[in-house]
Length: 516
Ligand code: GLC
Image (cartoon, rainbow, N blue to C red):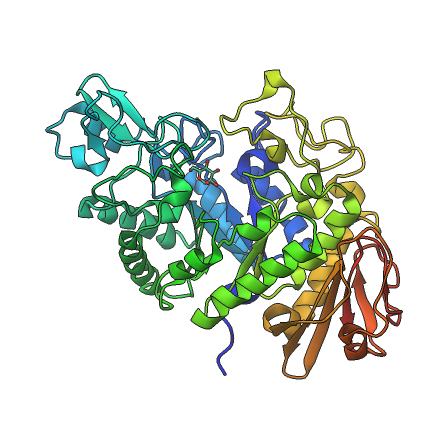
């Protein structure tokens, strides 16, 4: 048996650089700030960091609109800061993933500036330029993300429209042009040569397009086009990208953002083991705190991914979505969700601040900055209980609620904190092959509960999550028979931790059990 690759057993930690830690006192987080806080990540016990974009950008989409893929935006620091960060991460055994944004650039990127300069410019075809429709409107009925508006903007200077699945300031690149693909491969080489361990790839399912650009069908017309874009062309590009990564030593990997809300479709992006190493699977991210919903997500994920040898990923929060503590409605649930996330078969991706049990910030109308309405989950990380919470000046967004108690310093000092729950869980996970990479089988449990067993050789663990707000007794169930005499290794509310399992689960309680 060959050992599983590092990314299968890794716990990935997403850092949104603007919001993590401000090293230079301008109110915006930066690379030197991240570098100064790596000890927090080591103590927490994660294996890899994914850095959301820190490249040169006009910041219309806070860095997902890139004007130079091969430089650091001054607000985040310099390439030297980046190199130092990678060196420090590697010295601590942390892998580094950077965000690759291949679907679009900023409208201020020199490529787009050249492309828009004339219909006859050799780079015109690097983007999607078309004449208007018969009525003089946009070339088709596609709708942009974050708005009810067309995914097309008219450019008066050359009398044509350009495609943008996101903001008008984010024109879509034309990957059907081999020069675009080659340029993007150069970007990938640039970061691989600097030592990154891989990429999180933004809206990767968006890059291939139907060259006819047909209208979206009437039943989905008016919805954003991007979650509908699912084309064979993309798989050709992914296989070539994979070959490029594979030509480098050291298990470089790619984790794709395949924002298709259907796990069967997501499975296709792993190819035949020759496309993405990992893909996000978003349906569970949008599942409510309900046993039946989660059981279905777990079953569907296994049913779609296992047969094709695709390794799952699990995520509860990110920079685009209301944090799961806010979504699920209580801290007890958020804590139980930590054991759910970290106990499932697959690679978990944490979002900075979830280990603190943070809520979304309430952002007053005058401080709203994101066109997609995602400011709440991007609130700055509170590092300590002081007025500035470790930020030298007032940060770009307000702090989340409860920052006087839900901050890094206070939570490290409190063995009952959510942070300590994550730490204990990650210690237990690291010590158990069953939890890291073991097989998974759902157990028969009472309504309101989901339970499963993880197995790797002789190593076994059972995960039980009570999604109900009542005490549940497992008497007479398969789950209890399978765990007779077992110990509670980790409990989301610490109740019973370290003792023999009683067979009862508290309201919104999750436990990890180990043979006694
Ligand atoms: C992805 C990113 C999101 C960004 C969008 C456009 O969905 O996660 O933050 O706005 O792509 O790049």
